[in-house]
Length: 220
Image (cartoon, one colour):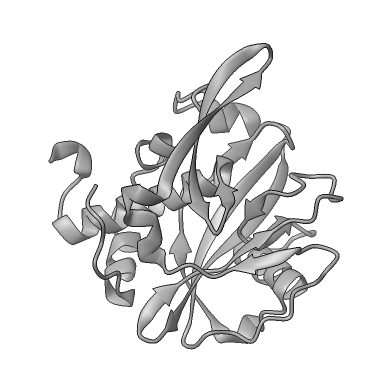
């Protein structure tokens, strides 16, 4: 994929109105040991914990950015990892309500400032047994962050075009169950963005590129 010189709000809206690439868009940033059959989510969803995250877009000097949190190392789920603001569903909340509530709790985002644009494809996370929904939202200006130190060690605010550039991607070999496995990641300010977060970003990149080109990348 080529580096995107511009990702506009109109382009993102168009991408989310098209059929999502789903697993096809996620797989190029998925760990090598992760099953890639289309029924994997359905199997995990039988008894998983439900959660939602917010993929927030906002302009900085005319360019769309997003926000990622670096999780403190003391947290029980995914300590020290980079993720979108989000967390477990509470009661009968909608997916959008969960994502916005969690973003408010973690980074101080006012839900009233966010326009939900749509969703990316859900992802199952085996280590924590979470099924996550990814809500894409838009704020018309950069929010005034108030990160919760109990849940957020630091914030990252990359432009979304950052993820379109292959120079910002790498992979590492990690031992999993006694075998070396390849885990791709985006590198941001010395942090590795991998796992479900990287897969969600990968689907976003694929969806935007396909909307830009007017066809599936797989067909190109």
